[in-house]
Length: 78
Image (cartoon, rainbow, N blue to C red; front, side):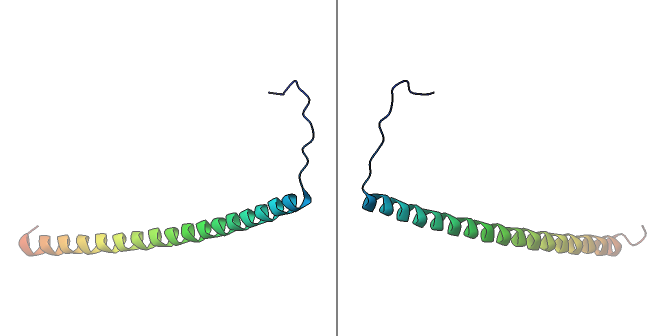
């Protein structure tokens, strides 16, 4: 949606302009750090999920073995 009226140029003091540029650099730096932190957290979560999957697999194997032993002890003829 374009404005039909002509907008006058905005004049900003050089000091204020430089201050805004400095603030923008700080914001960009903090955003970069946030992205890096997010990437590290994502990687950590993936490793954690993999580890939990391995634990679950081991638990399932032990459960299967216990069921097999129980079955062979209490139903030896089958």
